[in-house]
Image (cartoon, rainbow, N blue to C red; front, side, top):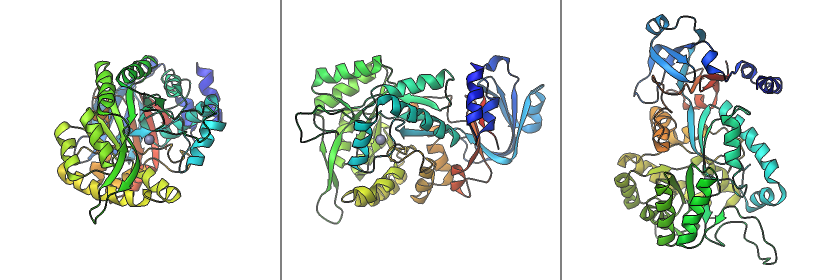
Length: 434
Ligand SMILES: [Zn+2]
């Protein structure tokens, strides 16, 4: 396997550290990281002068450098004493198989004129971009017509064939017949579907079983489409609901029965309400949140993944309702913070091109919208890990996976530092060195 990594090292102009990556963790010596400042993902305050001892793919000890050094005999030292160390970042809403879809044309172009193998090659590149930006874990929320290729990318990463984050894959997503692109006037053509078309309660259960059988870690469905504002100054953002309540409940029930959680794309208030009635675990986008819907989120412990970066990106090209939706969401976000809604970082990268914007932009929006930098960091580390049900991620603590990043400055003073990650480690393997 090693020669394959050497090939990557040769190609990796920006990341010579890749050459040091090793997957035979048992035989490698422990690593001692000296962190100038540590934001551990859970604590409310940073700590100074911290030692992090790593054995294999896990963190063994965290504490004052002098103390940890005593347990670190023979350890390789990585000196980050001039930097701020954080847990690896987590993006809970990505599309590895998509290269931006601000317009219907840009979406159709990919589904009609690019083969799934070609799209999977780009997805492998995107996985690497995510990792080099410090995102050591992602929840990839559907392949947009590329079937189960996300599971293949995940396997290639897990087996060490390509660099990439830990991937929680949701495969194809679901919408009823005719309610998701590509829909054409030309009924003579059978066009590719951006999702698995699913109809009826039995169809819903079968689709969940198929997706789980092909490796889905999460199930996603599209709760709504066709967004519009109601009348009045406090106009509510409405939408057309896709599934009947029975169908949506069947999706959620079958997914939960098989140990999978459910994400719902829900933009309008009607779509959000329908998804909550069905018992989903996360609401994606959620632009049309009302006070009463936010109360339901709190009461039921449902997470909100707002994907602000994509909202700004598509507002111009899509025009119409998409611009006012951004402002509507900003106001709902502020109210959600006051109510204690668990807002988790997700960007919808792939909705904007991976090569154009760093996903970490999302942190900046959350701070602009009223989070403290520490709250924003938690939403993209420990709280995101909680959404995923992964206790060993999103935190720098003994027993957790050694997924770490470092930035040169203090992200609590300037959150844009998170867009300039200088060090990346995943599972004890270093992918980027300062
Ligand atoms: Zn999305």
